[in-house]
Image (cartoon, rainbow over all chains, first blue to last red; front, side, top):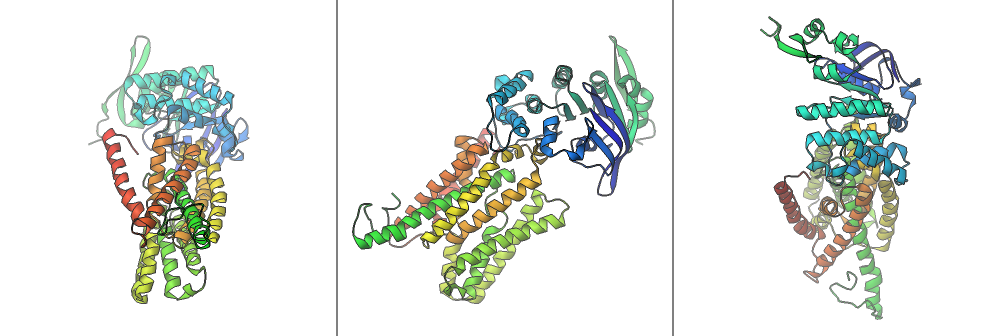
Length: 261
Length: 306
């Protein structure tokens, strides 16, 4: 469980987000949406322990985030950056084995149990069949599944994902989100995910926070938050929400008159 | 083999006192020093490439070579080289000073120490120290000094003695142990500093420890042998092709590969123009540069990144 109490975030005097009071519960997929620069990545950085709040406090299972060492934190929480690149051509399995680092001391080798966990993470993300290939030889969709396997190998309670579907083709976007949803349920994960695609947020999150101009504008079930009025107000774009085969879809109509001219 | 080869060919089982002296007091320390210098430079190169996530990084990236050269030049220009050990000591201090300045500049000018700031101030400081060296060379003027310094810039193992061997061996064992202990953290760093942090590796902490060990080891190697180029750049690449990028395996393998390569190069340096001696830097560059170009070309054809 993650709790933010009157948190204020920013960089060197530049305020990015303020008055954050949010509680994220286990097995929930919590979405972050909002225009570019609204602070989605900043919020994820703060919860991953990489950006200490200017004010307020962040708790992970009732423990103050700043009381945890980075290694302790890495056993509880896995975070994937928006763009990950690997500077050398490690094999897929070698990359996923890095997920076991926080569970081992520096001089310890991987145990049989570690290898078992790695293999399970590979199998669960359908990356086992190319486990021995170099990471550079994979497509971006395949690579995104490898990063997920890396996160799973950490055996975390919380998973932070920063736009995991960015730059992916439609089929891979769906595949990743389906995978994240089933992982959350079967591994009791708490997932915090930023998404720029509002339809993905609508379909795959349990709750969503809409960020704009330095604060949370709305928070709740996606159907209640992602309304025509709020989207239009925050994104300055006219949308229509349409019903199709029992599901709702957000369809952009074009920019609101006068905004772009 | 390196011991038997030389201007005077000597069998390893020779009992003649003169030859025995050449073997134990000149050739043996020289061969061992070549192996240690090669191992140290290749190990440091592999660490620097991992640390900076850059295939062009080498042990001299942060200005250690030019700092050491300026230190040595200063000692020679001030005529302090009549004191035993003054030149290596000047080089050691110059090299460490250069890295210390680079580190401080990068830390204060930018709020957080980042790789670009380090590399750029390394480049700037290298230019500055080269200017100091050139000035001392120009001002000092004595051709004897210039020759000495050039030999030093190109690197050479001609000054080998047992004390150097032991000093470098000790440094290599200590610094090498630290570097190998942190090999797994370098693996995590391959995914970027933020991802490494998410895996429990503190990138700033890691950089501080590794740069300290690399600087110390490189500075000692440079102090005893001059600035031998290309070993620290090329050998890690070759070994990465053979054993893969996992630093837990790559670091010891690079050290071994560097030791073998420099021993062979030094044997070449001593015999090709015997009894004259070729600066070893000429040989490493002659072998290293074309190989590196071949490597780049091959990689470009495969469309893979380095």
